[in-house]
Length: 182
Image (tube, rainbow, N blue to C red; front, side, top):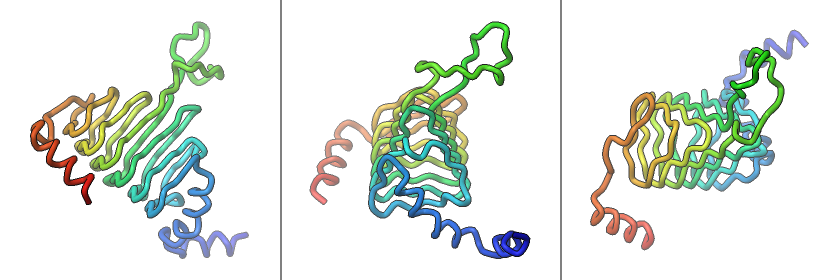
């Protein structure tokens, strides 16, 4: 056992990620083609509720916790270092118990997180339960996203707010036309 532990510390994490990624992908609700995933060097809980689209890039240091709710990541979504996504929280209204002692879970404590196609999430983002981030949006580094945003948003802050739209309405029509014809 000791030799195995010593050996594991000598094996680079990316090799362990290469070995473990196919296992995690098969355990997911669904996982698209070309998904880059670093499960050994990340913290994933509830992978059976993960639905990840083609070409998504999930870096090492990711923390994704899914409760009963789904974590849906669209196609070609990219994350900077150390993103956190959590689809649930703890009940905080139970009298006579500390939060850690409450074992009950209620539907209102869980909410799907949906990150639509083409979204870029910067370093250290936190995305919490019940949020939808519209397609081709940008989430600034360090943002804490607690509410949903429409497509083509540029989002930032704690809590996150709409900074501006990426494109004008005319540019969105051109962008979508070009995407659909490629």
